[in-house]
Image 1 (cartoon, rainbow, N blue to C red):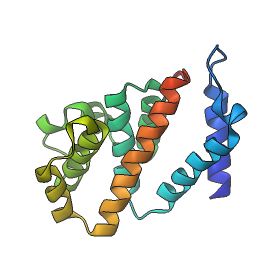
Image 2: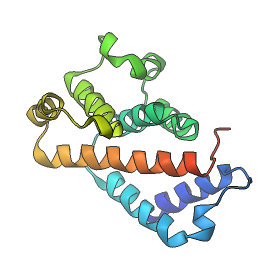
Image 3: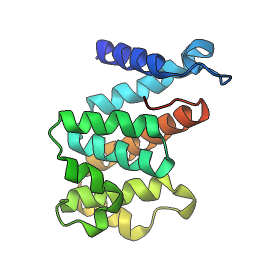
Length: 161
């Protein structure tokens, strides 16, 4: 696990374009390590790898974080997710090849990411019906974590290469 976190940190640092914006891992390494604590937790959960990547891709699409979209679509491909399923994540409601569980995760991801609209009882209860409490908690934490990473990436000017 420690190796995974180190590799992720090195990958992020490699892709930070030098510009006038702050480089948080250099200026506030403790803050970055705290974020990696969340990432370590997400990596250790029982969430399926595809569920994790769908959460990361969909939240990143909504937030407009090109760096994260690029990283997580590549990770999804490595897991064997088809191009079609990746391309249509932004229009998942109109695609018939996502499972009920995936649809519930995507709906929850959208509502938590767009939190100012709140999480509707319908979306929450649908997810609660499909997942046990532990898995649902892991889903929510994965959504929160990628949203934090998106905000770091966008605020600091990280760019997809």
